[in-house]
Length: 135
Image (cartoon, rainbow, N blue to C red; front, side, top):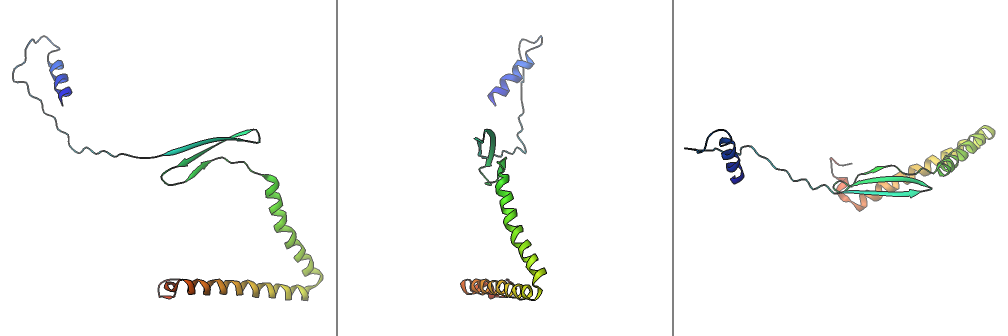
């Protein structure tokens, strides 16, 4: 407020006037809003396989952004691990159709049994799940 008063006086005396009479000022601070934002951000840079990667972590939400290295060999191995058994079961199904049907039936029954077991175990552990309106 004092700085504003001095600035107003200097502006008024900047012209040809030597003195001021009945000098008034009116300061109105209305609808001011201040919002302090604490926003910690963590930055990291690392070198992997002679390439530089950067990571940004939002300290408030915990979300992570940035680039990361991709191991294409591991991705190929996982794809092969999923494809080879499926291919083998397909070949078995072509060679031995009745046997394949029985194997598929046993696998489906086993998967269904595991799902029922997990569901009933959840209901035993948490009795609130059996009330109406909850799954």
